[in-house]
Image (cartoon, rainbow, N blue to C red):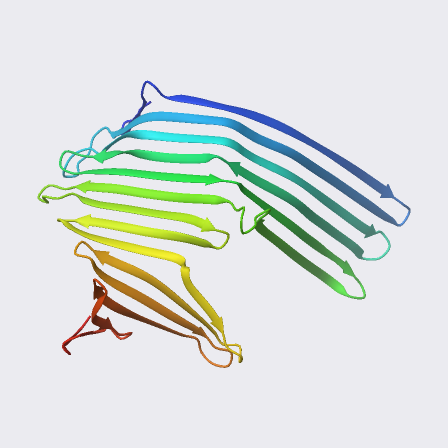
Length: 323
């Protein structure tokens, strides 16, 4: 497939397999009553169903290229693979709508009301999604990959909406509207919880730079309310590693109701020098909230610099610099 600007090729070896099951039903009822001095209508619709996809296995080998380009370096192309696999993807839903109206033929008096309520549950098991490949032109290239995994996910959303409008000689015109909705993961405990992770990697090869720039990032859920994140950056023979764990979030509450949240993360270079960054947020009851970020730089357990909240770096020998 191609246009005058882009060509897309699905290469040999691509495949797509999945089983789709749809079980839906609906019902409706409409009534209209016309009396001597008034009329009434009522319309009710209900729908429910289960849509599921099992045995998903999609693997595409793709080449996407610009046909021509006036930019320096020439046309950009992408060659790579897109893969999706899942044991179960499903949507279970039910919804009910009600519409009612009343009108008087003698006096200027009418009303209309409508309600909409429903529930839907999304289930995901054994899902993996990945995209990897090379973006390049004649002088530069980026090798990139993104991978997502999720399993044991069951999210239930509920909603309830009501509208009403009308007119009476006593109250005049009126309009009201209320709405509520909520989505949450269901069926989770401290021992059994949904798993999810995302990994990103790219390597940049640029003319004039001896070493590729590489970045790797990973985020993973490790508990009901916990997770870890890491980012590793390599450039010019140097390396920076960022690490964060939600277990390092500590929240305390004083007797007066003030909540203090302490968050800690680390940044480590290729020489083993560690910058530990601490952010303390104070949520006060009767005054403004505060946030203070400080840092401690150490090597092999020995502290040799402290970073204050205003950006002042004080070294162990008493010298200092300002960031």
